[in-house]
Image (cartoon, rainbow, N blue to C red; front, side, top):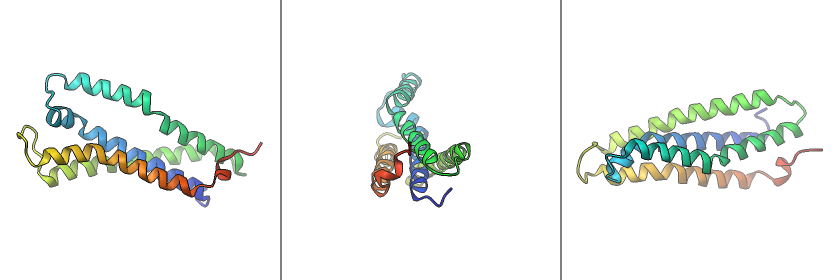
Length: 155
């Protein structure tokens, strides 16, 4: 299963997306309260953020699942459930690493919630935004390596 280059690249995309989503989610409350300075509406803004994120940007996971489906259908083994399980496990492990990385980076830089314009505020903004940017860059680089014929299904 992992001998197919396209599947390995899609697995990498799942991992990058999972890590980026989790890192962003881990620091969202800090970002809303500290970087934006909105303290009374943190819960409502977090809920709005999550709803918009899932409705507007949920297409990235759907696209990856469609690509896996095409590859499984075009392959000879047809272990769709195994592929799906492997990609979900990779996504969950990457999410755990994303949270670990984001919170460790905040602690290493010296971010303290409630500190007025401390050195961690700029780092908080970067830790909030950079994982998604890096995941997008990894996605672009990985998708360039998949030939269009590798993602077409065989009728």
